[in-house]
Length: 453
Ligand code: GLU
Image (cartoon, rainbow, N blue to C red; front, side):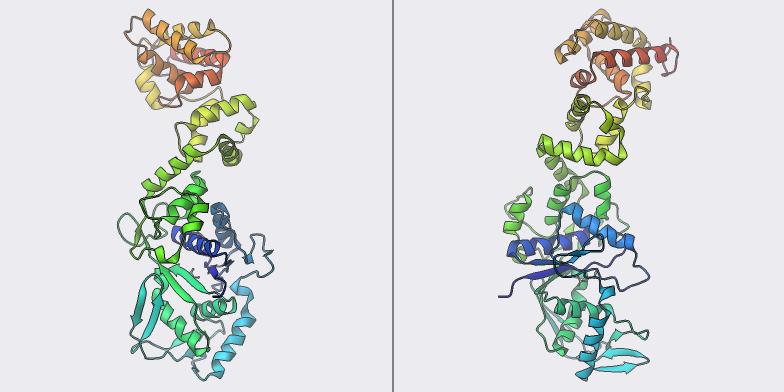
């Protein structure tokens, strides 16, 4: 058997749709599983939509998912591997050559300046590796324009020519192209060549059950990068949209998926996109990340959005990242949860004002906490922090320290929820804790926290 050659052939539309990303992924998986070649071909013949940004979105998304290609363009317009770059806009002379070839067969004719291909009227049969044999009635099928009046060749024709020229053995693409495929097969046959094998993968549906479109929430791959998801988790989830490893397995390393992936295990039924499940898988990857992996992820993910983090003393930074990591699941949350510790001038949330600082006792408790932490040992320990809270609660005549602890959290962070509190206090260190308590107490006394002096 010929060595497997597959391709991802996106049209630059301005976003890499989840469905497109999954098509790229399945081609990549199959190439890697079979030890074959994965080609990237940018189908950029529609000049009106064709911009560098739109092409960059595709490169960026593929890189983010770790889908390296063996042949095709690189993001800087250079050449990856020894062949390519494959931009259809640069392959005009190849298409002209094939138009001439097809014309020489007598199966074309000119009509109003356009060139048309005489579609056979016999039934068109697509032997699909996923969908099985699908027959298209062609008695009413119009002839196919293959070259427009302005001289430009149409999608169906260049798509076929490229797959042929590039020696593609398997065309793996979305099911929305299944109904085009009999036309493509007719073109291969007219050119006297055997078509590649086809595998049309099921559509991705949104929660409402219709085809996921670019207007659906989370339909663009870039959404997950921006929200700080882990690319390996997103990739794992995309693998499950139309392929199943069997036995209810869901979390698998990419090496394991490459080892097991086969076209015969692709599902025939449509896959429903489930954002909650993706979020859950992301959480599993998040928890499993080793400390050094997490440190690398955090650095890259915060570099742009929170440059102040890089300037923090390493111990403080690592301590904060560690304690916050336990409670969150994405890079975006990480950035937001860090905010109260990047300035001493942090804001107090509505919720903290309402639930904590409206308590008429708050001023007294804050004073006692400030005193308690001022006389605590240095460095502060979790046990000691807890002891201070207990003592303050006792002296205030409270049966349990919970209320004091909640107030303390809002005082040092401005929020009613956050990282594990005693651990956080240790990370902040005695002097910051005392300074934050003092600031809060003064603001409270001035009536600026919605409390009363
Ligand atoms: N450029 C086509 C698309 O983005 C690719 C079709 C194919 O994979 O053959 O839908």
